[in-house]
Image (cartoon, rainbow, N blue to C red; front, side, top):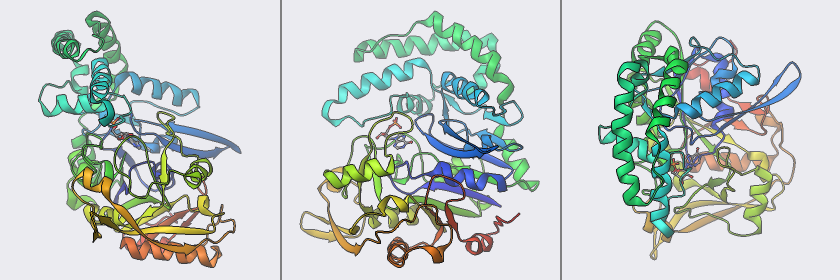
Length: 440
Ligand code: IMP
């Protein structure tokens, strides 16, 4: 059984928790796009002690012994960030070795000049800045598409690496001098490159063959999306997006696993909406309530610490995510954050230049002009934290959840009511219909 997990909003929906909860039931967990711009927070209890892990590049499955974690070909890998994350995990008592962490030899590298370029390009955008994570993601994907990038596989051949790094660094430095960015030191880059060869080569292999062979031989695969549908380079609020396909298409192109092998796709969605960085956000709350949701939900970036923008649930976005990804089900997260509200709004459509629509416009300017059309529901004003049975939800919370599902066009397979694994309502019956048995 192979399952893909996708963000259904603008990211930070709590995918890390859902992947972590599912990982014990899969043999392999793979990332397929993005890079260390992602921040997946996982909280687990080991030997009675609570441990918090923030994973950026390594699949969340790494905290589970016996699982193989794969960084797929569609991911952009910063060797420095990867090595730091490996060391941090080891420091927290997690085993990381060439058997449980594989990196695709086709995955493109983020090199220090990509980070410098990200900074310089963002600075040149002025008021139209995307608000990137400054991790070099966009420039690395640019080099990939321009067919001049270096790949993880290049780190397995030290004899040619110095020449490749010198060539690409010189090109990048020329560009940086035009953009007014800081040039990078070729010699330091080559020394670092040689060190990365030593440390990372044992992990680098052909994961396309590995994943296909393993799944055809009966291993189960969990495909862990980063970012989200509305940040997808094609389907998101372009140009305020990330530079990869974070919707379902990326799961195939970013692993080499064909669509026919993916049995189920689940979208993770918050009970309200957040977004980090610039770009349109029709249901944004720029008021005290927005601040309350930010504080209660701990809405600060896991990667950058930036405060997230907050707003009401947007069913136009949810329906779009269900459509674009063919979501079989949704995982609703952070319901408990709304526990104290008197009333709760849901956006059911947009009014753009005087006309109503239930569709996401293709143009970011039109999306910025969208006034949300709301329906209002009463709050439940009761604690839902930690509830793990649907029948135990307060009646009004249940009505809210049912309405979200109805408007989104997909059922909820999970409803998360807290950060811990057991603080989750799970529809086992729905999952088993798709071939996933969580009781095993
Ligand atoms: P980049 O991916 O660093 O190029 O940033 C592009 C846009 O995607 C910015 O608005 C970022 O804030 C946003 N972004 C990138 N990664 C994440 C994430 O993991 N969660 C939420 N937003 C993200």
